[in-house]
Amino acid sequence: MKPISQTIIAVAVVAGLTLGAAAVGTAQGKPAQAPRVRHTPMGHPSNAAAKPSHPSDTFQGVAKKLGTTPEALASAYQTAKAANPKLTRGQFVAANILAQNLGSKNPAITSAALLSGLQSGKSIGQTLQSLGLSSREAHDAQRQADRDAKAAERAEDSAEKPKTP
Image (cartoon, rainbow, N blue to C red; front, side, top):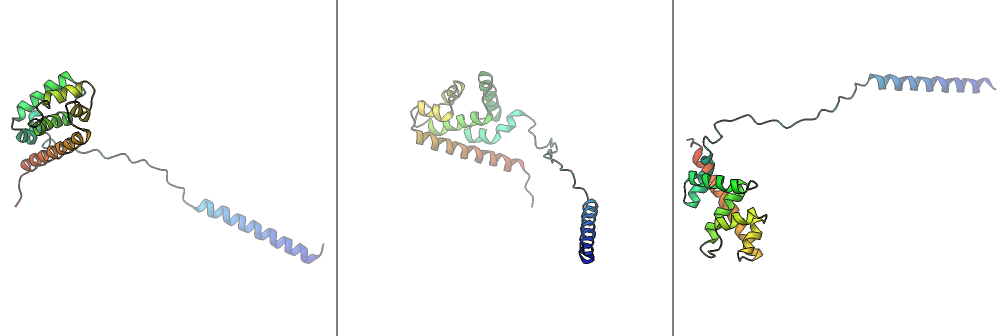
């Protein structure tokens, strides 16, 4: 081999080793990646003032809309819940609002009839249809009942909050 070829090979080897050493040094010099941390949802602090002091307090706005007392509504809910453990507060409120909204046009639509339909495994919409409403009428009635319940809840919330100047 010619001396120039040996020199070029030597330079290439030295350059390769230098680059390899530099790459290893750089890789080792990098900080290790921080381990992934899973963030859990932050719990909400307990706010005893926001919780109702009596179970009937949760029916304040709805009771006013229905023209009854919160205690009577809470008692009726407990009775209905005993008969149908799967009954939710929302279903109970919806059944009562629907009965009030539709009862004058269709006397078959009562709170008891709607709660009975829920107890038998039907939805509120299916129960309304079995009581003589069309699918569209049942849907519209449910939407109106939801709006009425939310409005009553907002009225209850605004009555509870003290007004600031």
